[in-house]
Amino acid sequence: MLTSNVALKEWSIVVEALAEGKQLILVRKGGIRDPKGAFQLEHREFLLYPTLEHQGEKGEAVIRPEFRQQYRGFLTPSQRPCAVGLKVYAGVSYCGQVQDPARLLGLEKYHIWMPEFFEERMRYRPLRPTLVVVLRAYLLPEPLQLPVKPEYTGCKSWVPLDENIPIEGAQPVIDNQRFRRALEEISSRLEGR
Image (tube, rainbow, N blue to C red; front, side):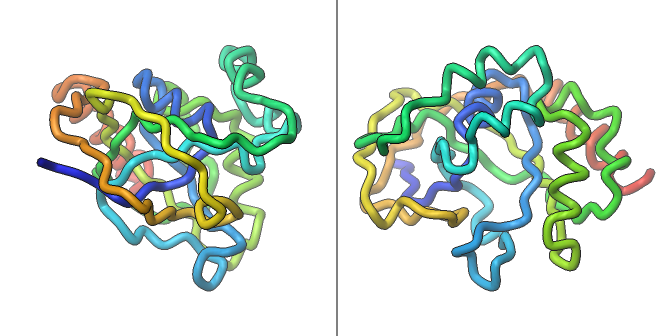
């Protein structure tokens, strides 16, 4: 049986957008507790671990207006949840560095962010690389609730899970042809082709 025991933390609204085929890209700099404070693409396949870390009300300003109502639905009181829902498995199809936020303009159909989000990410620790990662998302056959453990919390990107999560039978969120076209458009834009 195919399983995975590693997860990448990402805002809950982004994980949901990936699950719905409304998001294909992630823009990463790195968490404070990541090695050397920079994001490293340590794994090519992983589960998505939805989190509310850094997803406060101020985060709404960097989400496009048509996604803000859904975003508000993910905001919860300050108590920590005792379980997290896992339903998306992903594989990396492309990863590149971007220094100019203008390279991401015109790719709105592949993400839920406002242009200011990219500018903000690139200004934060400007000497650290900003990575754009294109993900192929798959829905797990059976979503599951995973207990939140202290070692899963905090400002870090990768979460090694204590158990192997079954991924066999996961179905792609978008069809192969649409994904290939999207991947070509995104990589061409980012590489200036």
